[in-house]
Amino acid sequence: MRNLLFAFAALIVAAPCVCAADAAASLNFYKKQALTLSAEPSREERAFAKTLANGLGTWVKQNPKNASAAEALLLQARLYVRAEAYENALVTLFMLRYMYPETDLALLNPLMSSAVMAVQPKQRELATHLFTMALPAEIKTPAQRQAQALFALSKLSGRELYAPSAQAFEEFFAVNPTYENSDLVELWYGDLHRVNGNYLAAISQYKKAGELYPKTPYRAASLRLIGDIYADNLKDTANAMGTYTQVLREFPGSSETGIVYKHMAILDENNKQYDSALINYDKAIELLGTAPTAYEAYQGKADVYIKTKNYTSAYQTLQQTAAAFSADEQNSTDALLKAADLAQKKMRQPALYVQALEKALLMHPQSPQAPELMYELGRSYEQQKNNVQAIAIYKKLIINHPTDKWASRAQNRLSRLEK
Image (cartoon, rainbow, N blue to C red):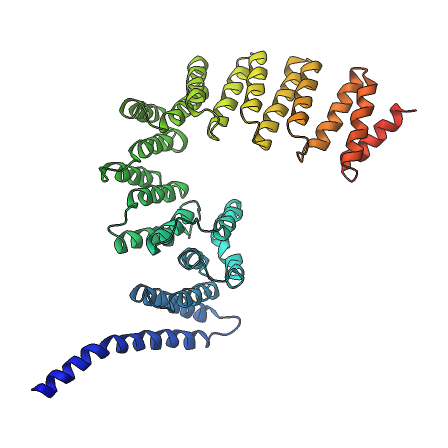
């Protein structure tokens, strides 16, 4: 009896080793099978490669803490690429990149260059950016890293990519039922539905995030996002306004209220309710301040003034926009260029045109647009018969940007002025 007990105890101790050996043997099996694929796989071999890749996915789920899990995911991605199942390859690569950030990008980038074909062409640059960006330092646990991979996938759309991305979300919730930030992941899942055009599913998902998590800080956000879908995607103004009004009524101190006022203003503007649009844009600007989301409110206000032919107020608003976003070179410059265009084409006031260009150059002298602005400013000085200033700005352009195409044009004009 004693010998039997000793044997049973030994079996219990040895069992984990047996399982570990089985896991290693299984992975080696997949490696050997992958080697049987030819350099240019046939249709049958591509189907076989996808089957092998699916099997590796099961292996990873069964052995999530195995030291070879990253290696298995890498082989899975390679097999999906060989199978031309680029959508599955892309999801696998994002999981590998985020779950195991120490993996050499040199191994992943060639695969990503193929997998990115699963994304709509206009989003491929975004996909590459999300794939190569460094993981935030505060993201440490496996669940957090997996969630960040899902966040990246939620920004991408593709007819074939949608299904495996959705499956990745569902698997996350199944594996991490007590994850502390599940409410936020639910919102990202809604984003995935929305970016892929499944608007009713997105609304349902946002409702889930707001209603099934009693302590969530995202209730106002989830409601606002529902309003955005009604407004932008379903073109249902009545439901959009009703939802936005609900946000303002139930969450008056929320950070979402400024965004809501901005979106209500856009709806008013689109429906030619310009007085109401101006009121809501002003409320949005007051609440949002100089946050990046406020820029659209400033621009919207200027557009309403243009549509109502109040060009002076539009010009002043654009000047205010440039001042408010002076730290943002692109936005402030764009606002001043829009003001300059307005002064030239609608207001017929050359002095205001020059003023806007001068201000743009003063605020951002090293802007990529500076050479063109300097050239246009020189031409404006010429038209005002101010040749001294025209010569000075042309010379400055030639000295500061000698190889720019605008410098060559400036030299031609300078030569005529100095004759």
